[in-house]
Amino acid sequence: MTITEKILAAHSGKKELSPGELINAKADLILANDITAPLAITEFKKLGAKGVFDKDRVALIPDHFAPQKDIKAAEQCKMLRDFSREYDLGLYFEVGRMGVEHALLPEQGLVVPGDLIIGADSHTCTYGGLGAFATGVGSTDVASAMATGECWFKVPESMKLIYYGKLNKWVGGKDLILHAIGDIGVDGALYRAMEFTGETIGSLPMYARLTMCNMAIEAGGKNGIIAPDGITEQYVKGRARRQYKFYSSDKDSKYVEVKEYDCSKIPLTVSCPHLPSNTKPAAELSSITIDQVVVGSCTNGRIEDLREAAEVIKGKKVHPNVRMIVIPATQQIYLQAVKEGLAEIFVNAEAVFSTPTCGPCLGGHMGILAKGERALATTNRNFVGRMGHPESEVYLSNPAVAAAAAVMGRIAVPEEV
Image 1: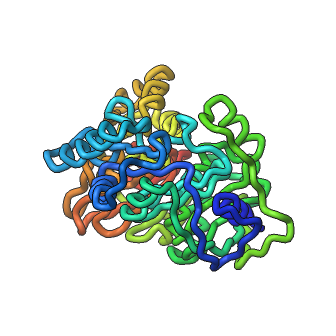
Image 2: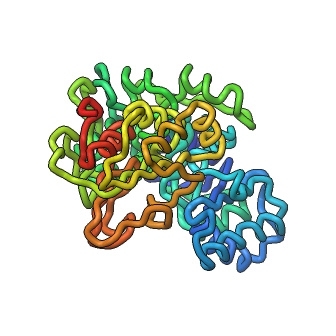
């Protein structure tokens, strides 16, 4: 069996299973945010359940419209707070303690290798970077799972993406996943497990692995996953709040498709509007001027991402025609950025340094685009109207390219700066 099949088998009480099977599986953690939890809470109340299956396995994180941007957002966040108090939930994260959910949960050791995790957010697949099966589900599935601790699945087929060769300077996890999505398309992994492997993946640090698995959904994937190893062990050792288990695919596992990528040939990559699969080398887009740069989100808001952007922009100024918004993904990352002097670098460069929030990524707040405006962001989606006006445009890149663009006022590579 593949790593995905093994984790699903373990959580459904089966010795073995195969793609296409329908199973009921026990969840290790269930999460929802201020957009998706209110519907789940409403449906949960309709079920007549006396309580949640385990008050320490349900995480509610207000991060999309928080800090609350208007009355409606405040009402939605209040629903999470009230529900958490009513059912004595141990994993409610208020503003000031919260962060972007998919950065916060790994950081806090609340998701661990071998877990089965469901979340009412499509980017729940991020945790595959730790060697867990994690996938986004609908709010009604979360409602029933909060009551029962279980969810049903169709076992996905697995595809293997093998990365080998030496990475070029500034090229990282974001470029590797954008390159793959550009190759296979936004439905190239439809309802498949995307297993990332190869020598290059084996040497990738944890933050880059989380970035890659985060965007599996942008290729239609059911989940993204990387087999845990020494790098995983080092990451989870001091922070895991539960026992964890390392799974790996058998040598004779069956894959519906295998793709191979020579990383020495992968350039700094940008996704152009209006699909993540519309990729081009950053160096070919120097004629594209921009109005806004966003560094942050569940894709690239970790401390290493901020360090990368700071390294490029240090001692420079954001172009007068550009707004640059830097959003650390958690309070811990925020504090670390202050301690390391990164916040000072960004503020001195005349960028905005924000409290943790998903904010502009989904067109929530903290950087909405007007008609005709163009943004380059380290976020994960660039659909029509994703960051604001339907006639605005979003380009996607890694933090180094984003920082270079902020200085140049157009899409640029770090060498230009």
